[in-house]
Amino acid sequence: MQPAMIAAWIAHVLAWLAMLALLVVPVYEGTAGRHTIIEVNGAGVVPVLLTPVVLSGIALLIAWRMTTRPVAVKVGLLVAAALLLAFCVLGVMSIGFFYAPAAVALCVATLLRSSPRLAPQV
Image (cartoon, rainbow, N blue to C red; front, side):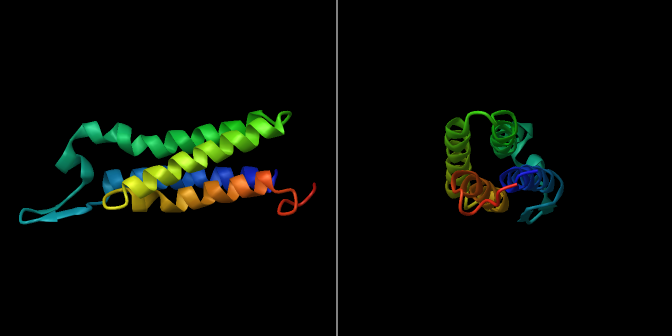
């Protein structure tokens, strides 16, 4: 397995872990005690929490399926990494920070895929 693919897998797993942690772990504290994000914001927040998972999943599929078109893979990974970074920056005051490790891993996957000097030849 190529290093870029491993980094893309790591990004996807980290995005899932962040989403599951946000669903289960109480992140809000008020006078009535600690509450999860769903208890405070309702089930409508689930699509927002799934956005980084979908982005990292698309990047993983691009890296996995498009092995014969290296330029398309580079562009696809770059776009997915940029969108995930934008999500983290826009949501840094609430949930964006939780997805930062996934964004970093996806950036690493993009760098490994786009730079032949960084990726070992297998």
